[in-house]
Image 1 (cartoon, rainbow, N blue to C red):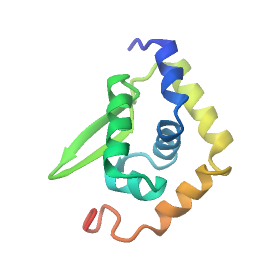
Image 2: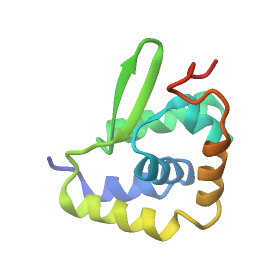
Image 3: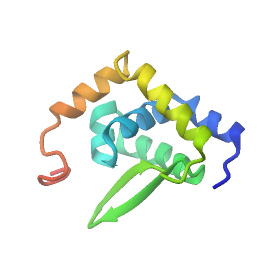
Image 4: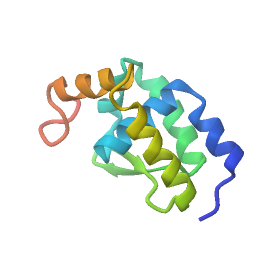
Length: 117
């Protein structure tokens, strides 16, 4: 898989996209409702950023009923995966990244129960 390095770093330069990627790296696959809750942003805003990440091929999505789940693209080149792994490790406990994980852990009705109910 080939991705354009400049576009890769452009995607990381936006705080909402970076926070989303760090959370997906830490958690695996997340529903839009989980990202909305954890980041404290509106659904249209998170969906717009996720669409940009999908178009850049940094994430993949899957539909399960009416819910859409996102995960970091497992086919990313090694250099991009290394950048994301290192970024997640370095940022996951700092602000706002640790706060995002804490919010997600406190989310009521997380997927696996009745998602977004």
